[in-house]
Length: 547
Image 1 (cartoon, helix red, strand yellow):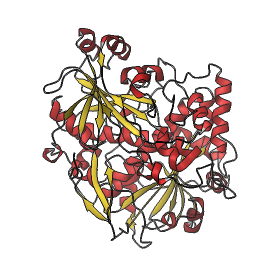
Image 2 (spheres, rainbow, N blue to C red):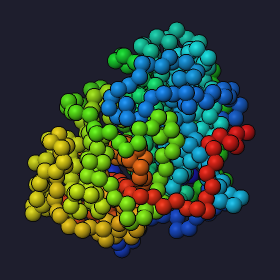
Image 3 (cartoon, one colour):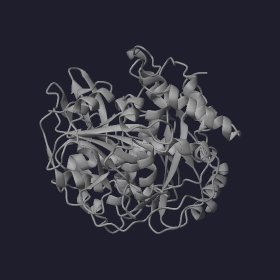
Image 4 (tube, rainbow, N blue to C red):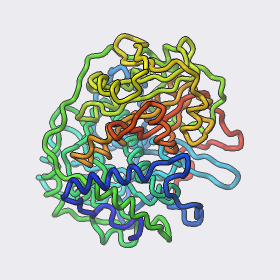
């Protein structure tokens, strides 16, 4: 099968035990190990690199205005839960939402080569994530289904609809944003492990949208009950005739972005779309494709059917995090976010700054990005602290849900100290006071960036729990991506920089912690420090090269 074909139309295996078996098989076989890396392409066919911009030829294009510079909301106000009065849902509001979440943040140039950066980070800057808008009639924008083309800051109208059922289905004031993934964009470079990175990027996109919505005074909720078939249907990615030989998109999720508490009726939206007028044909991103059946297998194994009741969510009342060093307008911060490529090995951050950064990773009611989730935190951070003044170097654990303390103490090495550190409300524990820079470098595929940082971390998720509902495995990666995006913004506000690390030796991290089974597994690594910029690269404005 073509690596990009059929991704959204696959039907999950009804036998959950076989799905779980396929899930755990993929998880083990996609691990990097000291003796060998996960299966990959071996070399890069640069002539066949996927186009980073999907567009739909023949669809009506609506150029969006640039309004983010007029947005007064500051980042520190958002992280403290002090949201502005809700912006109107109109063309300007929708334009700002996309501009500072999935829009371009800059262009980079080296000689005659140039490439775009975006507000939402992506593994290898390959951007498998696509964004869509479903909206009723808004001032300046007709009702319909739209695809967001970040290169042009434009909406492509995929479906036009004039049906009272459509308007009624949206209920209270708000819109729906859809997220999909094109697996081939990551598989071109990373092979089998690419599926993991697509899930990380989905989480980054969810967080980026949640922060941008909050800057406009809006709330965000993942519509977790929707099935993959419903997501594909309402976004139009199951329309095979509109894709032809173009790479298919996999259904990820739908987000409600609005005011109030009532959520839209997605099944009613789906019904109304049966009479919509669709237009546009997807562009093909690469001339050739490589077959990665393992990606197809894990896609089937984690297929999601419709679900009814979300998990209970913890809504702990916590004091606001301490202020960051830089109090910047959110739009400025979102566009200056960068992935560090190197650290200086000297920069230190203060103990207070470190605690404040970790504090924003704890879920707080109606604050981004955790307001998007309808379940309790499942991902926790094992931190390798190198250069934090006032705090001893060593191995630490941040629990984002205190109820897992007993389980983790039993799962990890019994000799760990578990000594409380930091503010009283911050569940941070010192496990081992020891210099771990070289171990961090080894675990992160021998990359200096993990050792030269202020701190590095691995994100632990209860992978074994996905046996009963394999689609939750995807959500664990999404939560990791959301954590990473919060750390990206916190680092920029602290005057340093972060970067996500997808290349790490999974079981070396597990051996360090004392993990011997799948109850807890490390799914994503991150590191923060003083950045070294490459002086050979030029930075250009984000929309300098509009067609």
